[in-house]
Image (cartoon, rainbow, N blue to C red; front, side):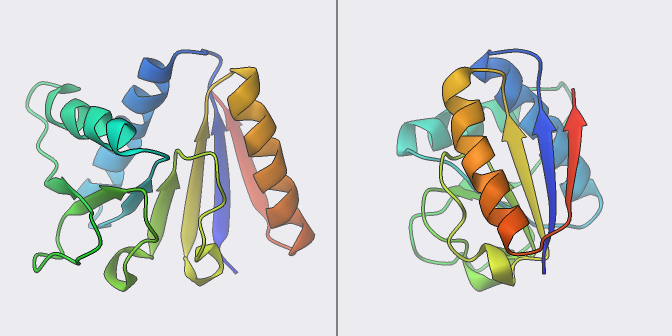
Length: 142
């Protein structure tokens, strides 16, 4: 069973949600975790891609948008709307409105929610699904 952690931000700002995600992604990368970031649309992927280059001066996080073909370089972060490829299923950041399809094969799922009603409703549904399968869930209010 995966370890699932929910981060619930006080802000309703999408920018704040992505900025917080960038900080966590940077931490994971610096700890040698080459994670997958799941989003709902290519536009969201592009926005996060841009933010990963600019969110903090001096930060360098190798990453690319996943379009279905696994990259040859496995020491980077992947961002996408598709299922995480096998080499990136260890840690999945979920910024999408859906449950990651292969979440039960994942070691760790990090759910990042803002305080908007739409995001919270989808997050509560995923929380219930995880809980019903016996997953232990940690929640942090940021």
